[in-house]
Length: 396
Image (cartoon, rainbow, N blue to C red):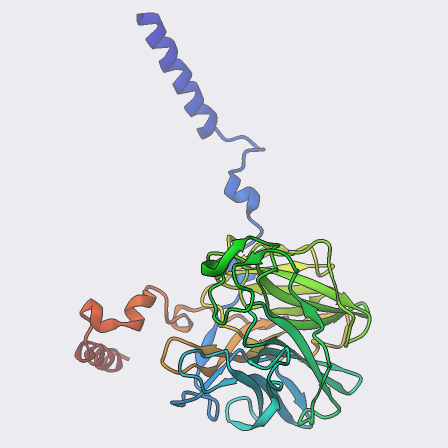
């Protein structure tokens, strides 16, 4: 027994030596994964936010899910979901547009695409849109839903001018995978999980957030999907459908889903491939990913505080140059209030831009979002907040 104990001691001692003794080939798992510091990573940034005029908070009006921004004749254009419903901020909605000379002061113009007549496949809502520009022609792809269906579709409208008029294509350009079963396919409402009979494919329940990029002469329509009977939206993934023409037909890739994470779809040309901001849903949430072919994406870095439903000004988004330059500003929506509204974000995701990564640019570091949302609940009263602001101002 005495020798057995001594043997076990030696075995443990030698094992400890093996993990503490370093030779020329020793490298921890973390450093095997390490590709570089954040400060040196081209696709790392910290986001800064500021208010805008014309599309900010307005009681009685929801504005959300802005498109990419384009510039025509010295004017910036953006399209977004506009809704007056008190129960939903994104259903029972139409698509509107606004223009700006500087990206800060916006003028809301008019509806661009409105819901269809009763009984049409888009009679309940047209929402969450994105813009495509090809050969001087403008295309809006968007989600659409009829009142009596729980599964939505993707529609498209085109125009010869960004101010319209817009002509809808007569049929959707993309639909959900037709499997999975609901107890009542024609039951109005939103919770498919409560109406579940049989689960379906990854994009059988809904397809959301469509956006098109031009690559190698092809039109890549990216979209988010979730299956019939899914318990939570945080399990959503992305897919892509490919066409030879802007109007389609779009054919879903056999590699779908092409991400295992991501809520709002956000893709952009980057160098010879495509970059993707994958926000809060799934095991790879909060990451920037990159793909040479637009299908096989790898994680490049992680990000904090990604703009919700961001739409950026990407000057070369549709040029198909294989030399994507990235972006440094855009609009997104803020939804943690009674009415959703748009704000401006700025970042350093333009190639060769100087990174602003000092702590003074990262204001939510060391904060907790629940405290930010309900400070009084945690004993942080208005008086305390005002006193803290005075103290900071005094010590500047």
